[in-house]
Figure 1 (tube, helix red, strand yellow):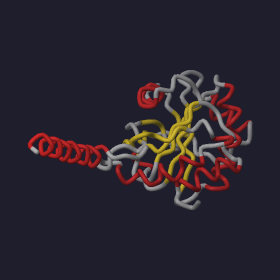
Figure 2 (figure 1 turned 180 degrees about the vertical axis):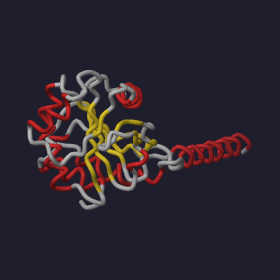
Figure 3 (figure 1 turned 30 degrees about the horizontal axis):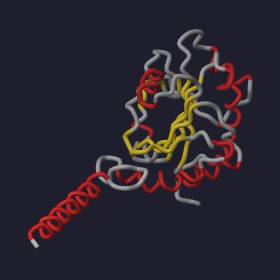
Figure 4 (figure 1 turned 45 degrees about the vertical axis):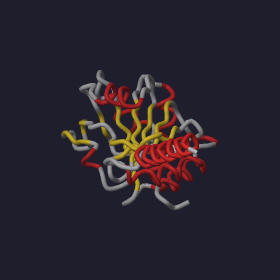
Length: 209
């Protein structure tokens, strides 16, 4: 019948449209399947189930995206960039000496670097103090933080860039960034970074789970 044929044709068109929509936007938690960070989707899928226990507050990103372009001071005092550190998984942590929770988690970050740091992974702790600039490095020495390279942003450019990118308004803020410079997850607040939950999370991001 004409009415039946019209309904069938309409259903076919709707199904085709839905198929195109799914192809363009994807169906998983990582969103689209194209773009500069499309290759990060498998790592996000691996690490998401490991955001639990001591690292339960880590939020795996919905859609893989490039990490923000950041310029800061390297261990030699000269300018460096986040892009220059690509090639391995990075745990980028922002901290300050006026932030009590930041200082409380620094020993754990130091242990994580000591135990898992290497060709595939590094902790990049960036100090964001803009006054009393000798104080952060001295605090690290006084507290036996010896495995972390000293990165700093005395010019105050990194914190607002990270706040804009992640929506985090406090410290510490930590980002997990893959070897290609794509953000995998964000932690707003402190964590026990040297514990078994954190190590399993990092291992999952590296594909070692």
